[in-house]
Image (cartoon, rainbow over all chains, first blue to last red; front, side, top):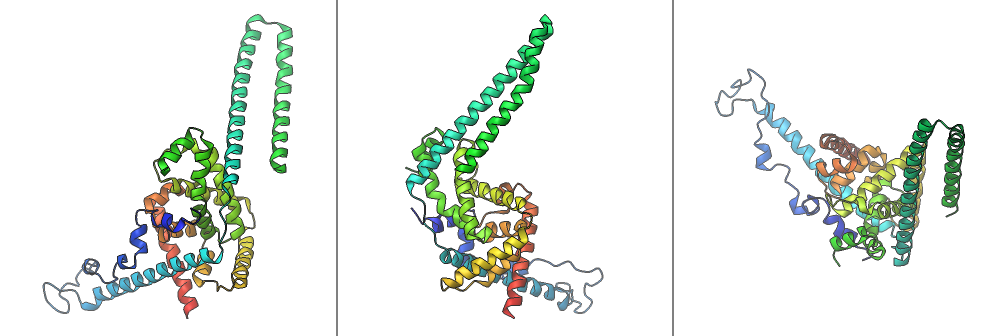
Length: 175
Length: 173
């Protein structure tokens, strides 16, 4: 399964198959498109031919259609060149897929980090709950000692958080 | 085991399924990033970051898009974040392209001119152009990946391809 990308890429977007199949590339001058009526300037009808069906002078609508066809063809060419050259890029820079052990190790590490974050959030939640209870307690009992404890906690809590963050950053830098 | 089964097990915390799932998509993500960044080394670094991020966030994958599209979304946003961090991105990017060209030459391959044209595009256009014209995503799918309106994607793809076309024509002359 090391090199399953081409299949994966082809099965990607809903238009992938259509775009990769040269036969599926729409023809530049397909009837459906050339049949789209261009915007006709007022008063132009019948000016040259006088015919009710094709009253607009030929150059007034055929030229934009030709230009559109040219643009579409150029777009298709650019599209094909782009895909071809991007495929060539893959061939120019081959790379190995890491061993299954590497993925297992990373998955275990990710699990450990997720658990750590969960515990941290839990501690923060409990801390916030404790703080609210403490504030209520101080407000109700009006004890000076409780107020002092609260002051001390307000100073220490950010310091502890800062220390924990620094330790984590150091560990990330080391790994 | 099919992909859906692997995803289900990975989301339940099965590390073996998670590592197997991401190993299956590693090549796809790496090749996508190589095309978008046009930088082999950066593609390697970002692929690792994308794999790690996907492992951490696997429970957030809701199955609304294909798993590979979800990975592409993660990889794209990592690349865009990386660009935001690089102040002198344009200079750095030019240097990297020169290095890639030299690497290709040293392996006996010629650097395709369409890649120069693609490299000259701003990332805001290059990414939608690749997603549309190489991977074949619809404008709506690309819009969902890049968090922008389908109309914006369409105009970026249009102008991007026009730019590539122009560069290719100039080179051809």
